[in-house]
Image 1 (cartoon, rainbow, N blue to C red):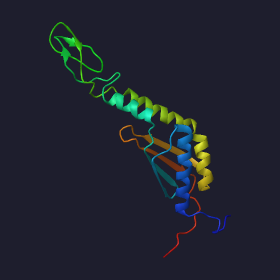
Image 2 (image 1 turned 30 degrees about the vertical axis):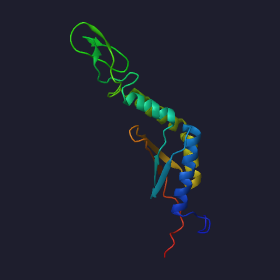
Image 3 (image 1 turned 120 degrees about the vertical axis):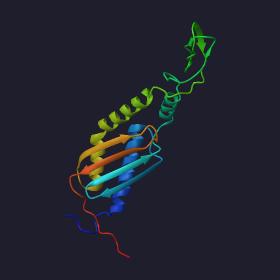
Image 4 (image 1 turned 90 degrees about the vertical axis):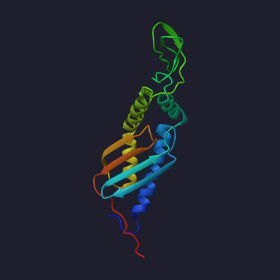
Length: 174
C-alpha cells in the first residue's frame, strides 16, 4: 500500500490525465487540443477537449457544410432549365442551362461523417496505449472507454470508467 506521502491529490491526477491525453492526441491525431479539462468523480474520469481539429479536418468539414464538393446548395441556372454546375445550380423551367450557383448550401455531410469515423477508429486502435497511460496515472485499470466527437463544435469527450476510485491524498483543509 502506498502511504499518504506517495499518493497524488485529485488535482494532480486530473492534471496528469490532461498531459497524457494531450500527448496521445498529438501522436495519434496529429494535433493536441487547444484546451483540455479533466474531472475525476469516484471511478469516472471525464475528459473534455476543445480545438482538436487539424486545418485539413476543418477544411473538409467546412467544404461539405458550405455545399462545395458534393454539397447541395441553392443557385440559379443561367438560361432556362435545370442547371448542373459546380457547387449548386438548379434553375427552373424547361430546356437546359448551365448552373452557376453561389456554392452555399447544406452539404451532404459525408465529410463530417467520414471524419467522425476516422477519429473513432484512431481512438479504437490507440485504446490499449490510452488505457495503459490512464492506468499508470490513476493507479486503476480502465474497464470501459467512451468517445464522442462533434464536427459542429470541434469538441471531443472521452469518458473512462475505472475499476475503482483511485487512491488519493485528502484535500488540504484551509
